[in-house]
Image (cartoon, rainbow, N blue to C red):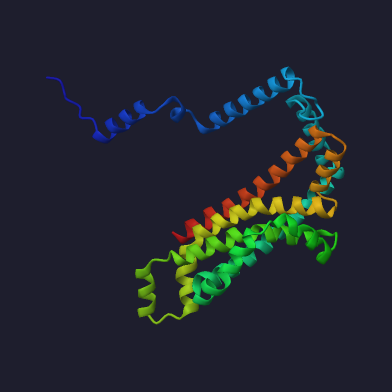
Length: 277
């Protein structure tokens, strides 16, 4: 007599679902990213090679790679790119920190008080609808051509998502938990710190990640309008000299900076959200 082996139904279901998956669903994400990037570069190369587009308008991937190697070499050998990167990084970090402080403060006032929702929120929304780039010359006039105007521009552009997400997170607090805190006679400050803020943590970090990216944009806008010694100024100078490949290389460097700040905020999110749970 042969022994009949029973198979866990959950295993059979998992196998059936795996068979129904498409090729894209079964392919690892990192491989899809590489394949898509390779396809974009290939189309780019073919377009430049066979369309007759001037290198002054759109350089090919090889030209951009050469400029990127030059830029990175200058960066790691302590050249002018290293100095410009440091200046821009300082502006981004301080702009992000200022935006976070302003956004958290306004978000807590809006999310925790009726006055904030009725009186302050309309002004915050109105400010966000304004074309912020138009404020760059004003910040230069108010704060000068130094890093202060770039920091203020970065904070001005990136404070809104922190404000809105903080307010939304505070409003999403469990009503049953709020009633429990009231029954325990907790005051408004205790409820905010011990109940609402922990509930709002995922919302807050979602806003902070957006602000991390937007702060880079704000700094570059400020450097374009107000000069300076950062990467935005290098991009402007390279564009004025029709060095489009150099422009692409420096934009990639700015992108890496934004990804680095975004990644740091993501690491903080993993720690604090895990701690909250």
